[in-house]
Image (cartoon, rainbow, N blue to C red; front, side, top):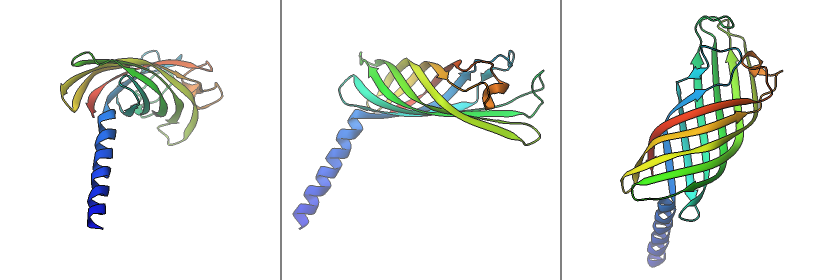
Length: 189
């Protein structure tokens, strides 16, 4: 029984090690530029973060899952009062391709998912909505240690499909929004 336990422990640790060598987790700061008709001076959302994980089935092909969160408090504007807030988060998944050229690791992906938007007035009333979203983009990781890399940058075209009768109607008169994100952070594998 003791030998069986040792063998089971060895297999579990070996399996975890094999998965860890093919998987990576990244996280860091996220900047969102919102496609907006009503926010000509306040459409940038610098306060946000992202977390993503990728499992590589082959050396260059993997499946990525991504979560991003951004929040903004508006100042007085023609459409907003000081204290109005908006927050958005999204969940996405899809294929990622990553080249490994020495310490440089450029990547590209197509991630599909859902985005959620909530707008809260300074008075306390709020509206929210969720919609299909898509991230097309890529970036560059630089390996600094065998299991650690720095994400120098990731840029995404971030399509959201909020309708004009939803919570996003305060931001856009279109049924789709062509947003852009930029992220930097760290990668652990």
